Length: 477
Image (spheres, helix red, strand yellow):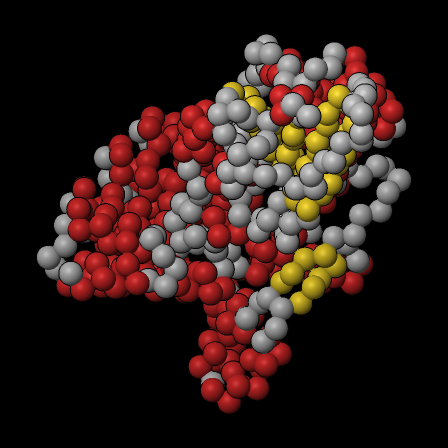
């Protein structure tokens, strides 16, 4: 057989994105188009440690003997690569599936890996580098945000990818043949045809409908409007949008009085626009620290259940069961108690030793069950007494100490101290690690001999790794 007659296609996709359906459509397309076609799949280990690879080979039928088709893609011998996410396109390049003979078609959106999300700083892989490599290494790269297109058309990424494949002209079949393959599949035909059409148009360079960039936050209560008016009157324009978002976040987190405290703290930092803008963001984040009350509140919100139902595309008559993994440590439990009680329990070795085993392991909690929904709802309602909890008192003392240090520093150093709040995030062990790194930097700053550049260098070192090795080396130097 002539190599130019054989067409090899690799589909790389995450679990749940319809990669198998897409591969079936391509196989049916080839068979209906008079080609001997075979499709196989090699499942990955997990959604973010190894994508499932679907491989299709096709060759025009009619030879003297049935062709022998391969079961897996071979590096350097793949004509078309379809990737349902940008990192999967990058993996295809690294595996050698993408060469100058390859048409690479992929979505440019990201589904972040656990390592990216749990990094101390911004652990995201560079999307720009992957896009650049896709253009350089392939014969042609067709890439756009297929997740957004699927969301807009009420379809799935597989149908958008199939449309982009048709629009690319990489296969010798007319558009109607692709659409017939979708109809023959019999699954959500109308929605899949909408996604297909949008993917086809995007691959041919037709502009996508653009959503308006809505950046205005409109207060809906008298208290919110009063705080918005205060922001407009008192804060520099560079800080107003951030401060308005901070107020919205803190009213949702606690109440209007807590949002007023936020603005009082911003007012105390002077009038430098850059400093106030940085503080508007980082102060709001610290004041809305993640405690057990906040976690419970987010888990049982109606909007969250609606979002999950939308993500799994559940119909109105379908029941969705949602199971969470939760692991509150003894420290988090005690910090939710009234300050006096929680402090005494943590200070008592005897009680800590007795209670710690009860919280040594995580739990799978079905938040859609009545038992756990009511339990978490009661905990979320505890926010009205949050000011009396041990965690609230500890965090407010830390915030006031941070603000005092900022006010006592020159402007450049003050801005770097504000940015050090990036180290403090999450809850549990993640929070403790970040707080420990922050404390080491502040301790060195208070000892003297550290300017704004030194603060920035130490902060970047602290964000480099979870173990604090880079920060330790930077402090030692």
